[in-house]
Image (cartoon, rainbow, N blue to C red; front, side, top):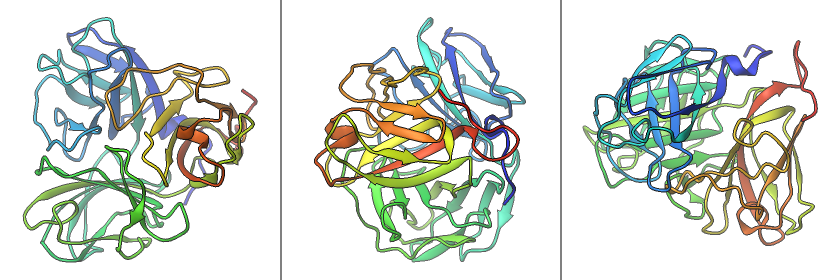
Length: 344
């Protein structure tokens, strides 16, 4: 896997203001294949995900179980330096409230797709082997099966959603806790459980015939993430229930950090370097609900040149001493390559 010297060529957070009309968002630095959007000001607008494999104008709701929608005038196109939004007249939350501040998190795939036959199910894949990220579309068979992800390295996180069934959760499969494959749900606060699946490999991940991952004839989307030195890190830390919390070494200055307590029903916490530009970073959003951006002082972290440090004794990021938390982090600046990170 190649070394990444400029993180914002593969992941970037882009803030914008909604205008309830055609809205060309530029400054992403690449043509995104995966864009996650949340209205920061509204407590009623959902988190929405779009990707180039399923196609534009097909939002998926992160904080719920809804099936894929096809809605014109949401995210109309993925462009060379960003994306273009329509007027969003149905109120999907991406551009319907003129003047509202909004965040988008953007990842680069392959800017194209390929058929993948590594698994027992043929998949359609947009894979970026440099950054360790792939988008995988497949159709279930109703049986235990494997699906090719196209990364040539083993993902630590596989996020799966049934596109056709409006009752299934966002399954977050991960080996980042103890090396076994555990399961959480991105759309709710459930604790972790054992998945019962085989571990992902450098070519495939496993599914079963359930409605959540592989019901016969139903369509699924998966987002796979493998670690890349200096660019991404997916791990866990143990709480100490103190305002002087753990320091988590990443090997880079973070641009995006997602945190979840695994042993209790606490919310997911999402912070980034654009909404929270100074330490302590307390500009929180919550993928499992519609809440507006929260900047209260009850929880927050410091973004450091080589990782992040927990700065609050709060159950959502530093609960009862000994509890385990998972994190998902992407870099602003790497500590490797031509542009080593500087202090925040």
